[in-house]
Amino acid sequence: MRSRATIAGLAVLFCCLPLTASANAVIPIMVVAVLGHLIFGNVIVGCLEGSALIALFRVKWWKALLVMLVANYVSSFGGLALLPLLAPGPDLYTLWHCLWVTVPLAYLLTLLLEWPFIAFCLKGKPRWLAKSILACLVLQTLSYTALYCWYAKWSLYSLYTEAEVVPLGEIALPKGLRLYFIAAGDGDVYARDLDGNRDTWVADLDSVSSYDCLVLKAPEKGVRRWELLAWHSLEDADRFGESVIVADVAEDVPRPVEGEDDEATFYNGLVPRLGEAEQSEWKFRSGYEAGNRLEGRREGTQSDSIQLVCDMPLAYWPMSRATHLPGDLVVFQLGDRQICVLDVNRRKVALLAYGRGPVVVVPKTDDQTPPP
Image (cartoon, rainbow, N blue to C red; front, side, top):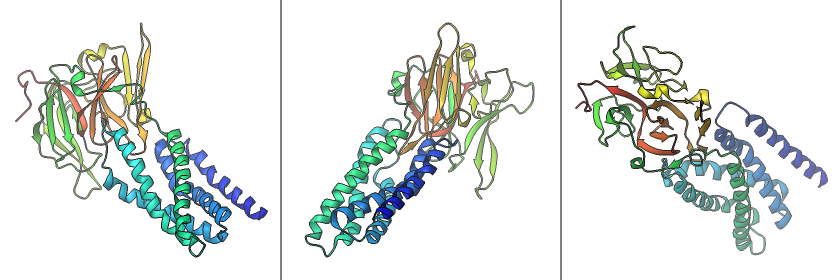
């Protein structure tokens, strides 16, 4: 018995080692947590639950361990398949509500999926049915307490602690600017004047890939004319195409922080600034070069900083394709289907539109309304 306990302890320790190493890798921390749970955590939890059945109900050790290992993998992958159907994808406003709904649903689903395995282990013993129900409740309650602590430890959500989530009407958006984006609904390109609330169809794109985006490009060096382009996946899904959406789209476009260029392609890294924002003391970074966060630092008379990230169960939302606007507002893409705006001085953030690949420009002076 002592040798078995020693082997089990070494196995648990061995399974824990990859988790520690992976936590420092340059990948989303919640991906590490979920993979650690699915690949290694199920082994640990299954062994612990099987050991509890052995100690409390004198189940054969090989039967208890093997059955509970299978039970944990069945419930984990079953939950991954069923929970998205019960709890659709959340947005900036509904994330916490979805989490508090999903956790009880996952707990109940685990009880339903794992009880037959526990009943199989205890069948034939006196009062096996009542004991299997009680054992299932106790084991899953303890397991979920441990899993809650595990995911709470690795979750990052400064998006909700360093900024206040507010309705869009509480943020004063500047006049004379226009947002172009790919709509999450139909995949077409739309435009909206920032001080308005009407989205106007611009072009048919039928985008389906989360990697599709809009960019600005000067077709000729030294000429103040910018094309609005769409980079989008082609039918074979292995190549990207480039389509001109608007040939002469703007009077002015965002500029890189360091120096000026005739192109603004909205990659990751230093966030380009539009108009009066070029004189701001704030500098921002976003995208993978910023760890898929939105980071800002204020230099000058009043030093300040902000770092927004959302890396949680149900919501790994990279922050990218940002534009620094006058008034120290930042329009950025959150995840793959939300476009948000941050008022950094007031620490308020709001959902602007459902879509991706946002581009903000100063429209042509003779075209102050979105195109038909």
